[in-house]
Image 1 (tube, rainbow, N blue to C red):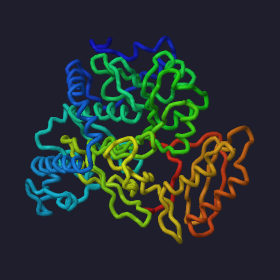
Image 2: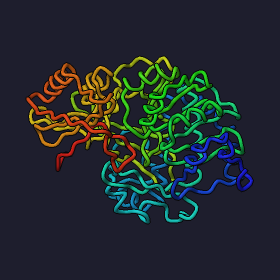
Image 3: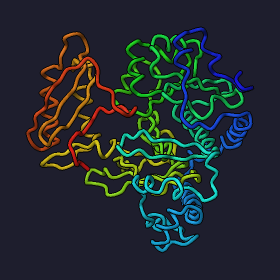
Image 4: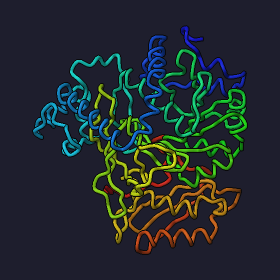
Length: 467
């Protein structure tokens, strides 16, 4: 117990590195209290069936409910948040104007620059008590860090949605005694709900062998991890199914479908991905049929200016953040909707994304074919750089100039190199995508250099002025 509350660190089972690396914090956290945990637990007990029901609503019912939700949010922002009052007034908006989807989609877009320039007074309600809120600083992977303010209400909802989504991804039902295991550089909002639904958090710096020993003791039903750490666990090897794990959720970093399928074959349980942002929370989740479903009762996604391949700019709205509304907010990512009208076998009415192709500023640039989406580049990497036959344990693919690219690779074994067959195949595929000849340098390193952000980047454009 700590401060009269359940303390997950009492469950280290005497493993020294677990005791060391479970000392994880997160900046500006709103302290957990008995009352806040009781409120979240009561909310979960009351809303759990409602969250499950919404997951299976028809498109008609879901879109009707969501339009009403957006209408209420926009009215609130217009009446209480100076920045939105200014831009919506200039657009001729008045309270109650959102009656159709065209009304909502006619609202001005909001950029990172807008939110940074008007922070904090312009983008929060005039009567907001900032001392009772949490300030989150985005990772800055886009090069423009954004501050986000959330209140306890929004953090409670985030906890509920995360638990409900894990149940859908893993096709199981949480019991109050079930553990969730979080491998990350930051703790979640709650370490438990009055001792129920406990969460153990360990830093990604913990040695994998010790962490596996701990998993065998704790036997969590869900492991939520940075994508790169799952690769480290796989190198040691562990049958997660035998220790009771029903779902592994990867997050915060780039991973490919091929990589996750390989991890599934090692761990013996589903390894599925989350798509999220600090500003908007959960955006999409991967179901067991490997479709990314927008989490439509937590956020609203739009894809604007789609190219011929359907890829367009992602614009999102957090349906529940009244402390600092993000409405029609330009995330800086590229994605496309799945054009297949058939319902997914997982049974949800949530729309699915055909591709989540990474950040727009990670796209490469071809003199012939223009912007090359990160997802297209990752497909080529999956085919030629990811398999063990490539001879690489890890890689990064970089564009330096229009015609000069580079693979930075970590050899799989001492003195191993990228196979000539894979290099030629990769070169051919990239030149097909670019529509012209390009130079691909190959550099071997002992370890891939760290980026400033925790978001692992396999694809990096280092050209100046690329947008």
